[in-house]
Length: 62
Image 1 (cartoon, rainbow, N blue to C red):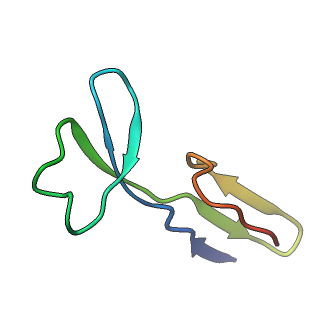
Image 2 (image 1 turned 90 degrees about the horizontal axis):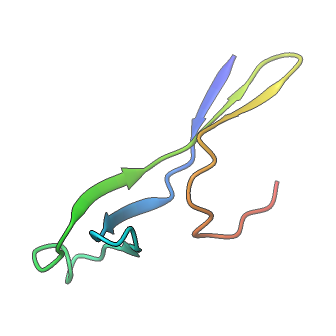
């Protein structure tokens, strides 16, 4: 089995549930809940399992 972390990024969620990507410049000024979004891909001999599909912030192809 192989577990692959798919880091999507660090975000802040505002009280109105708008998500914004956090950058080094904005981290101290961000108002709201700060969180890291990191889905995982588990690869076994017979399956590929995606845990937490993330926010869809980036496009990615496999």
